[in-house]
Image (cartoon, rainbow, N blue to C red; front, side, top):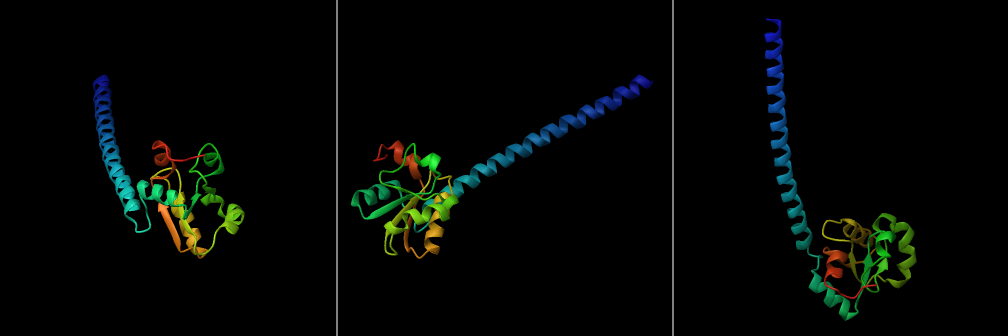
Length: 156
């Protein structure tokens, strides 16, 4: 009788454990579906901002020679490759790097900021810092360095 009670308790515990694992799996699966949707919405939102430009527009701006490109990534990411002629102003070290390029910029400079790709928020942070410093013509190239490089556009 004692063994039967123990077996019943063990069966109930196993059942509860199985239900908990299934519920956890379903919850995790649902969260993953929502997170993918969330990131897709964020990407679309970035590309639809009025100051955002596409890869084609960035290439045209580059070819026009009227724009200064600023790379918002870290120095470690910048050194192996960046858009040709782009200046390094890491968003996370803005106060250290901005004085190094400030003499090459004026309030009327046309600036394009970028970072690695659409998932990177550093370019947006750099854009806001520049706007706070009085730069009015700042555009966001959200697709960034990886897209530029993938198309074989001029780089260093």
